[in-house]
Image 1 (cartoon, one colour):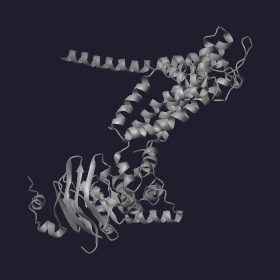
Image 2 (cartoon, chains in turn cyan, green):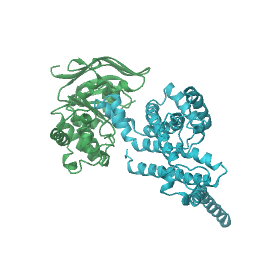
Image 3 (tube, helix red, strand yellow):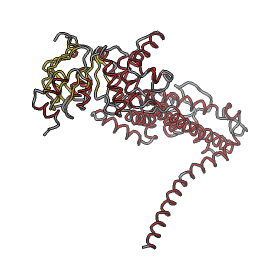
Image 4 (cartoon, one colour):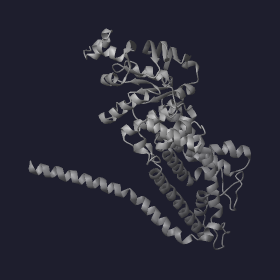
Length: 281
Length: 252
């Protein structure tokens, strides 16, 4: 009796340790990546790195200003397209849980979420790039917007679903029309969840390379014209890291670090927003 | 009746195929508290929600018959207008969690985009909270979120929010069922005060509460209005067998 009890508590202890070890292990890949990119990239980063465009092969120096500006522009335009679309769609899904449109639309969102980004890229190539006759930043933005949509829609839907139906009724009982109930009560109550979904989706698409390969294409110079090809951070990393030149590898490492910092900051921002703006229901 | 404010004629309400309210005829006099009681599922809440047209918002819900407010059929008016004239307080306190106490009280104006001077707003907030017997407890914390209040205070805040719109009728759907006895007592006392200015329709499944606060009582049973009479009369001398059984607790 006594010995079996000992074995049982030992097993229990062993299991406890096992799950702690795995919880710890999950942080290792991330920490390893951050450490490695930081170690290789930090020495490349300087004010000049951020404000200059790349130099031709053989010249020392140069920076990633074109890619940084391009990434910000492409992602911003993608967000402008995807955020209103996604929030409205998410509102519909949370308001009409069981309608036929909702079921189909939810399925579409799920499939879209799993669609490989390269497929989205090639479809946009045929839809926008080929007919317009030129690679363009806006076509890249459209591809990224399609990738953002499922994240924004789902986070909006899940957030708004948690808001009790009694709040709708409280609004209606005060004589509010439907759109004001949604826009003045329901959305403000879920704003922290909706915003964190938006920011996470921006973080998620910032590093997407495949949809940009044959849409935004890349550009060695600074360009702010969304109808022309534009450079972006992931494209620069892809092109320069696969080149045979050491100077270009340095640029790619520096750009990787910038991209990593971008994503980390957005994730931290999401956490801050969820804790600061959270509305106690 | 002389000063009837709400009356229904052959009123029916349905959830899909379920006939929840059956052929109800009732006259509710002005400045009275009318209790609507009955066992669970008897259609009392559904009937209440038909008065301010909230019932129709449930998917599949329909109704027919006449529901008159001052001799105008509410089903021929805009629902928005109807709900301005008929306020409602719900079973669970539901202050808007994104608004302060102050903004909750004037939510009906603020969210509808009705412009008010600061002085008017302050005045509406103070008088509504005073009428709801909450002013003294919250006058120093008006900027705090309404959800920080206790359950009973939240419910009084919801009453203040409803009466800030100066409705003619106030519907209360089991307003004390989620509250403790002390909060319940304070809300009941408040109902007594409120009937001076408003007509109250109170759904309750608590017979003692109906007996304590109401002037008239309507007894619903299986969707029908089984009996409707002056409260004292109904509790001392019920005419309908079903009412008798319910009041004496002999229900089978």
